[in-house]
Length: 226
Image (cartoon, rainbow, N blue to C red; front, top):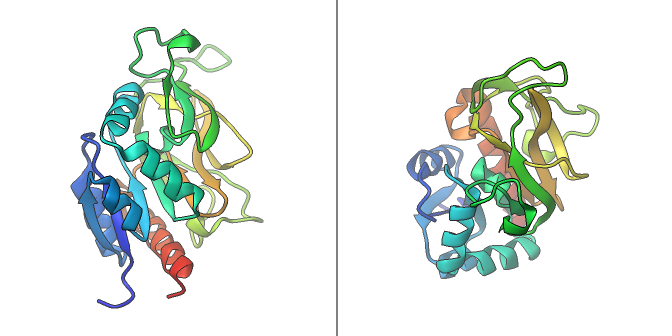
């Protein structure tokens, strides 16, 4: 169908691919799953989903030749969406899955689109109150409605999405929305208005998640002049 952008869902052996592909198709994209760096280089947009450990994922992407292709396409302004582990991999480093998760010298290296180290979600808050980790279930995102990003068009601050994670991204100037579970952490990030990351799973987040995927597809169409 004319006007349907080709969006590659990157397969780096970390699961959750089919539901993301279905969600993107429902949002109006011609979505397809591929591990091939050449397909990443040709697609109109890229989605990097994933469930697993940062170190293993980063190693797999490097071995499969995907890391360089992803960095090149993001730098070129091709629309990109990282979901959960895909958000984490946008950062410079991560402690998850390393031999010594508290030793920065052994951190795994991500895509380095954003600065900082992805670390463990604390199990207690500042008052010493305990929280369950992994953080699993519905939670709200909070952001400044005065300056909504295109990815959140029509999605109000306070909307709920489905989360499942044990690690969190560091706060940077690219943080768009935050969520609180023991601590406040970035749940939406944006880089140069074309590269985005979300800590939650839009493909599991009912109407709000579909609205976000439709917004991403609209961003891709706008980038193509459709």
